[in-house]
Length: 462
Figure 1 (cartoon, rainbow, N blue to C red):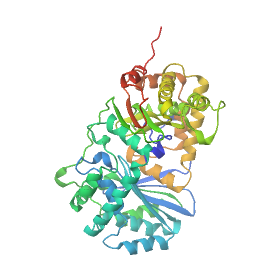
Figure 2: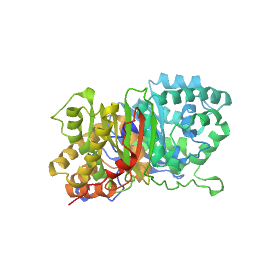
Figure 3: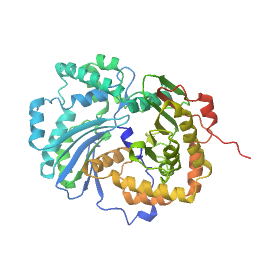
């Protein structure tokens, strides 16, 4: 899930509303209500005949220890295998009979359970979601069956080298901290996690103040609040022994990890520095900077007329098969980087030009570069919110992170405020002369020595 969002940094700082947009925030507005137990209810009514409703929870692999890493992902698999009120068959029949789609995902800091359905079926959808989250049966037999499913999924992920590379990047960049854990956890944990581990995870993290019931589409906010009071008022807001889980700081370590396999056809390489946290005001200039670097894929065509300098070079010089600038933001840190897939003979050149693109951002970025980056970023943000499910996801994550939904008009105003000087200053702050984290998978013999990559993080100036 992380990589699906790489090109579109999903976090914005929870600053006071930009004065330029105080009267021009995009309609429809996102309405927000808090229940007595601290659970928040947020919705955006778009008038669609369908709606998406879901529960977003502040829980993920970052809240796990080495012992229970993967518990959140395992729970996601257990969620739809029946509840105390609805056995698996009955649950599936209810969802099918509504023509609905029930899904879930787990990331490093968030877990979500959501359903897309007809607007008229909103009450039933909320009822089923409350059952799934609060009364999952967690039977021993089902746990053993899902253990095999999770292990097979882990094997499948190992063949997705993009996911492998980015997990390794987190593992080395945040080594020794919970952010270094993968979302799915190691296979050893998948074999040994017990029902008690899963129950303890739910009891520790599924608390009302850490939950948001979000909805988008043909929904009425007052009706949603009433449904939330009916089905979620019983969610606990108290912790056993006042043991409120507090996220420990995750330090960034400039380092590298190499997984060389010359039998693989292509090399997958990622280089990153510590990025801005979700709440940082630096996030918007960094988003513009990433838009300037852009992305490239050989299968999409394009050549000397591509607007991104790095994309033009990649096409003309056949430097790589694809590359992507990304910024994964977390509550107190982030990863700002470039991921590329290349032939083994092109790794050195592609790494050189990737770092060169970073240095250009720090020193020589132009007015036209920034204008192009702004336009591309605005277009991607609009495209990202196409449909009730992406809108609902946006609402859920924003309320968890910032306590409010940040509208597109405010995004646009903050993006418009970015200047070339700002891009140069912010990029210099995060990139220039910083120790990078590097991950490489495949035939990576030509990946430069770490000290050489480190020395390319600054330019000598005369």
